[in-house]
Length: 178
Image 1: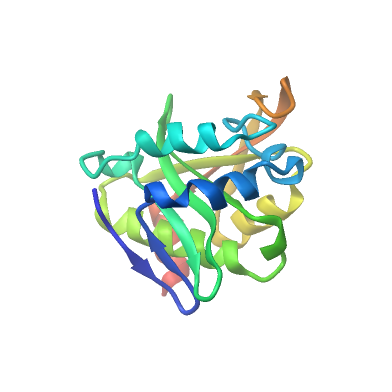
Image 2: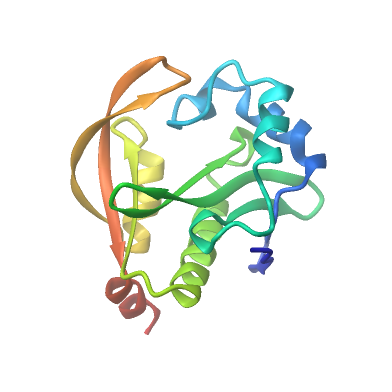
């Protein structure tokens, strides 16, 4: 599915092959990659190119991904959906130079709004590694609630890491919009 979203400061658009270099630049940083389950470290240009080859316009809504573009900067991060055992999962990352500006809250909120408008899913899953308080704060602000704890393989750390599992229901999301 090819969708572009606009927020006050951002454009959320499909990833393009030309995004490989900024993706590599930002993900080849342990401070970023170490917070993500499915990203290796070090992260190479070949990793970005391989991932970009999996991005096709005919993917289902549950596998839609958005490059986060900031005017004047270009690609600075990513937010996207993938299928998990209990249903769709949202994940995201932001290049470290852009942390603490509210950018990720803005991008995730726009993506969640689009997801609930475009699908019939009643629950969206997510979570964070136990040490990622900034990401947990984003989810809490948006209405996600903790559903439990698990362990999840972190490729960058080459280890199973304690994970705080979260979910957001359609009803909680819609109630916050009113």
